[in-house]
Image 1 (cartoon, rainbow, N blue to C red):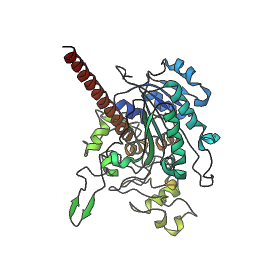
Image 2 (tube, rainbow, N blue to C red; image 1 turned 180 degrees about the vertical axis):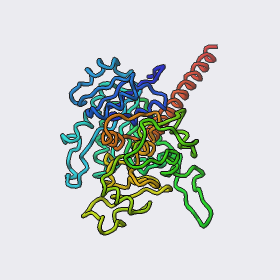
Image 3 (cartoon, rainbow, N blue to C red; image 1 turned 45 degrees about the horizontal axis):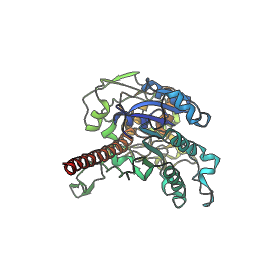
Image 4 (cartoon, rainbow, N blue to C red; image 1 turned 120 degrees about the vertical axis):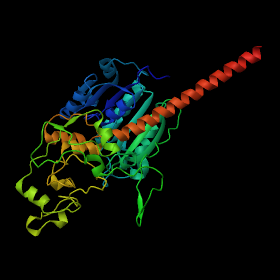
Length: 399
């Protein structure tokens, strides 16, 4: 088994394409993406126009039929990726429950069915962190066993996106597998938390600090709530490496429009300072309940909390801008998720928020996939060198 001249990838449950951006950055050609959410798939199709974008339920297309649609044969695909939705982590579910037999988890089983038929050289499955350790790892062990039965060597790990240069604390479980017998090592973090001692900053790992909110969005122009342009020029040069990385060669950016807030929502955000939240609201503006981070405002030096599909609503989390009295724009959310500025989101504001809340951060996906690819390349070189040595030995024996 060898890689194609141009490595091919397919993204099941692709959403808007977070993992696909990581794949592309790691040198893969995106052959196809599948998602049942038509509104999410619209952004995938817009940004990957040469890939087949299939708006369907994966369970409605048998894997063999799918291969005919996308034009591949078993064993040809270099990597199959995806984050199958899974709801089998309720504390009310008995521990003895057979998780993959639960109809709610049918999509995980369907993903594994695709692995069995397509026989990709590598597989990457992403899901919530609880998949790895929940219920004494019974769930993840079933996934590992199923992949092993299909000839894969599997590594499972829980990774935090902040450790890989994403300005957001987002923990996710990943299952990395291959058909070469390689026990993949997890990628080494590229960024670390920094401790402060007096006036000295101590970097315990000699690596860059976690990327902060302002490191990520500080170069984007200030806008009033309800305001913004369809195409927004950058007001100045990038101030951080992260900003430069996100900009690439762009001179202006889309999706930087602030959502218009209801009067009371605006008053709530206007009444608190960066770092404050629901508990700090004046009595006359307090709500009866809500999330602990509701109506919270970000600070410039913090790492953002996990982005959710409700990021458009100030009452659902800490989504207030550090300077402006508004919630963060779709472009600012995209920066916090590590989508490059050339990635354009389509659909309504809430559709775009949903796409981002459900996406895998591209920088994290890229780090994992590049790490898998590098290890496979090193393995192939070792095999090739061993074969050359064996051939030379044979020639000497014949002589």
